[in-house]
Length: 399
Image (cartoon, rainbow, N blue to C red; front, side, top):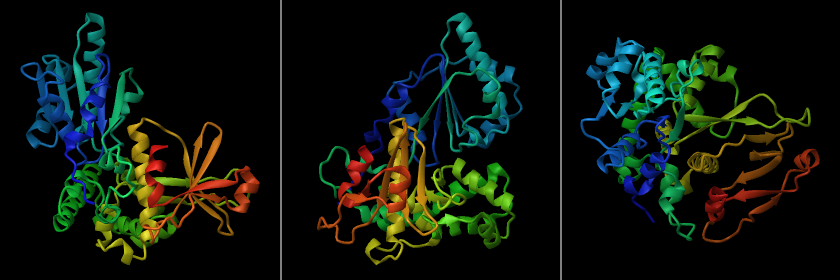
């Protein structure tokens, strides 16, 4: 079943509005094309936030807008935006003087508290490296952060009790960017190609002044070919003709720009536990498949288990962001190859999961509860883990 989703059905506008406080700046962060602009349009078009003469919107993707702001001091920014009750800076990571803009907003907010005025400020960002500009570490600006990510499985299936209400095969081929999900298969490929080139090459290469385009592309391709594998920085550097420090810098930029995320090893009890190498996964599986030009049917793919593992982890992280949860996550492996795909730590509890794509999904052939590896049981005293397949995916995401 293929379920189209109207972006208005996400219900993000009311959730975001709840975040806006007269004394706080609202940062809306997430990758390009994930729905940030739609959210702003919905909030203003429905008069949830009152537009009109008291409303000013700066789209920092536009060259002329950037030029009008770039040379302004903090005091000049304050004077400019003080004329409006609501000010929105879109894609503010494009501004070379973002620190000055933030400082100007801080000055305005300080005056608001003194004079009992109310100026509402919203800033959208497509990069975590700019989510907390350097100036935020030195000033007392009050702010809240709201994430807008690509669509999630829970959004698409809503409250349905049917585990197969979503076409998981299509999800594992094309991912969940809104425009991709709402396109037919052929158009989805074209949209992904455009998105990858705009997001990866425009946002990352241009804003971060990276001049080794081929090396970055090869790094991304190697990550895409090795999802679920422990990554050696030195080997990756050799493949990409880069030094180790540059590889680490590129990896951090990709993490900050919502392209990939990192999962580190749990190693607290034994020298036999893997301690060094991390794993990297893609926030959107369609982006990963675009990088290796493989949109084949899942049943015919040798990488279907890795695709499933990436999908489950990304969906779990999106669900946690939406619920505003945060807890440490790890994988676990010993040098004799006993392993667990995901361990979440809540308070003092370790909760283990493995991910298994069931090729016979019409038959309930997989148990959801399994014995933990013997070494893990001995080290941590935990006897069972949850095995996540198609049949219990929704339960896993709702936990």
